[in-house]
Image 1: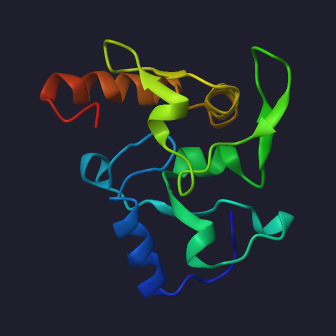
Image 2 (image 1 turned 30 degrees about the horizontal axis):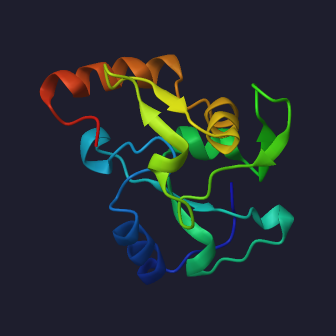
Length: 140
């Protein structure tokens, strides 16, 4: 997690751009009632700067699992690939929801590696998604 201060105005701009959703699992602040964290897409440990172009929102779970990682292993091919970048890439190109709307499925090496590395289908989140589906607020 970053120790760099992100000015309030920049934090609000990034939150607006991200539609107040985690860039990885798409969980909404409104649904969980907790503010998202600011994620350095290119981690500071790898030279990433605290500038608009390098920031996005992430829920605390996704942000914690991402840590200072920029790459991960695609479990299908065994290749090391870049993690998904929600600012530069389209979610639907790399991921899809199962028909039940509770699991995220990787469509590309980047998608699969991101799902595995950030544990996008962690059991507690999957159980929450099932409830969100029932009340009609998920998938986004």
